Amino acid sequence: MAFHAYMFFRGNCREAFTRYQEIFGGDLTLLTMADVPSETPVPPEQANIILHAALKSGDALLMASDDPTASFDKVQGISVSYTTNDVTTAERVFNALAEGGEVTAPLSETFFSPGFGMCVDRFGIPWMINTEVPGQAP
Image 1 (cartoon, rainbow, N blue to C red):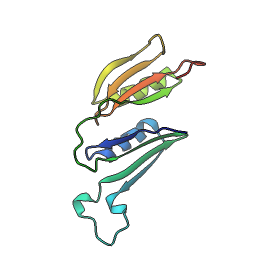
Image 2: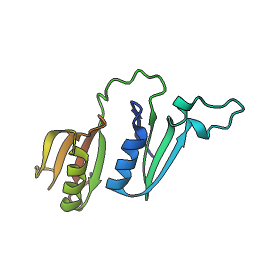
Image 3: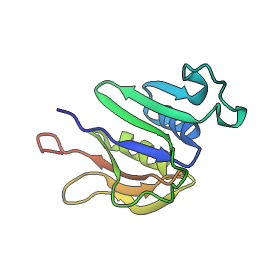
Image 4: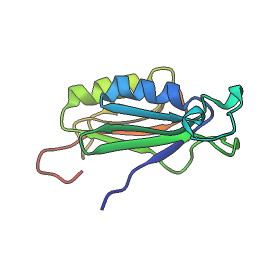
């Protein structure tokens, strides 16, 4: 069994996932309205709307789309969690995600992690960055 986060964006899904690919690496797939097979042409202003984005790296999968309801306000009650076994990687990822966003808990050593921090990225997505302790459950 696997659980995967699926995020919605206010029209900037392509920009966000291009940035996430820069940060995390992996293979990025973007499907737009223009990619939908249809006999009716897509209006030009809707052609680049992202219907589905997938960033895959190993077993990790992050997915999203532009909000189809156009009622997107802000993400609440959830964070995307990224875990690494290396503090240097945690620092790099945290700093990249926090750039242009808001740090809600600076990356620092805690009783449960050599490096844990929280931020909201410039796209409005809350993140938790954690460095796991070898032999301890994440």
